[in-house]
Figure 1 (cartoon, protein in one colour):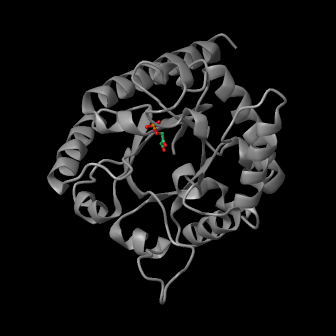
Figure 2 (tube, rainbow, N blue to C red):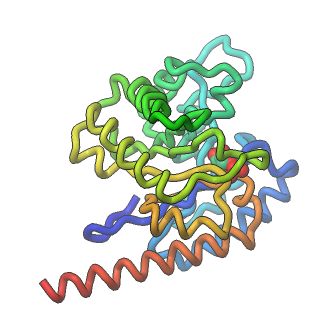
Length: 275
Ligand code: 13P
């Protein structure tokens, strides 16, 4: 994550989930994103392919603004845990970040305690944690805020302030995820929740460190709504599911993030000159 004065790069994180089916398809998509990432100045592309593809793709990870990561890690470090892959093993395979606490893993039985253990092990392995939080339902009384606060507090329990530089949070309301989602959240929804998340994070790591923890939006992000979240919603980036499998859509999202970064840099230079 780079800072330019008060500006920060947008993180465009791609969660490929259990797609694409074939290695050569993953490579083609990846090559397209590598090509698109060559000229990046105001954004970074983070890609979380299925675990077996990470090692093969990292050979071609030649650009600083492109990161490879995993979609989950084990709550164990090693031993007799059939099917599990530890954070340290993912790091060796080339993962620079790991998604933890995704709602699709929580739906398969992952508890808040599991999420906290995974966060701790990933940080210990010196991998950046992309922690997902989000309510299942949006009520009219603000109860959903308590759900989000509790997910953030329990996930970060015991996490030292010094680890906050390797922490990114994605607000992914469950009701907005996937092709059967009612609708994406709005940029206003995101903006208020992201301020709230930073406040809860500050309880754990202090206000200064919390301000530097990027908060991304995820849930039915498309090339048509991405700019709204980045600009009006002030999102520090996006966690993109289905749309991240479409290279042409990703190119539009990348171009939008870059244009916004340039416009913000220009505004900030103008502001500096008039001070
Ligand atoms: P969709 O963008 O497909 O709704 O998925 C969002 C998501 O779960 C990203 O982690």
